[in-house]
Amino acid sequence: MGSSSFIYVGMERFETCFCDVPTDQLQSVGNEDCMGGDSFLTVYRIDVTAVVRGDPHMKTFDGRRYSYQGLCWHTLFKDCSENDAAFEVTAKFEPTVDRTKTRTVSVNVTVGNEYAIVDQLNVITGQTTGFVSEPRRIQVQEDGKTISFIFKSKDTTFTLNWTLLRHVFEVSFEGSDYNGRMCGLLGNADGEGSNDFVKPDGTIVSDVDEFGKSWKVYGKTCD
Image 1 (tube, rainbow, N blue to C red):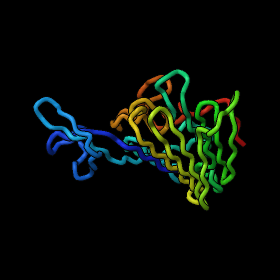
Image 2 (spheres, rainbow, N blue to C red; image 1 turned 135 degrees about the vertical axis):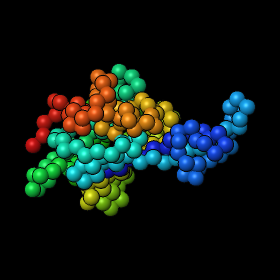
Image 3 (spheres, helix red, strand yellow; image 1 turned 30 degrees about the vertical axis):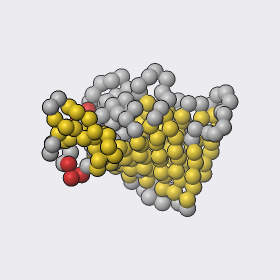
């Protein structure tokens, strides 16, 4: 499936970044400086990539890599800061031709009462309930074999790219509103990969299949 990246915001005290990322990998964010005790702190940011690719191989927002051979619809990531999620992105996994592995064939993006579904290269948009005011919260852009979705929640902007040829899905976000407040197959984006395998009930597990199956979306039928 795809890859997803986000902007991780951290601070450096002299030569040591608090999140243990080498400072030569960081980029300063303007003049957003602050004082920390008796030391001068500078705010930095770094692109961190989460990946779901191929059969599918996953890399969470926090860099944890794993493979999961799930079938049907699963939650990739969603807002877990409130009971009513502001957004949710799910993906449909189907067997490959030889039926030895699975791959991503469809993605569903839901923001509020709006949705956008891409199946192969066919895009369907609409609303779950009520009236959708203009402009739409989910923007759709098509460029050859790549389809992009862009939406904003609070002060965080998400950009999602789907490439059918490679069955790759990429999602990036810029903003800190949802750091540590997301959940799903791509983890929680809190900067710590060891706690990415969190089930919907909040339990942290180590088994890939137990984690993956817990994020299966029940109630949706698959061929």
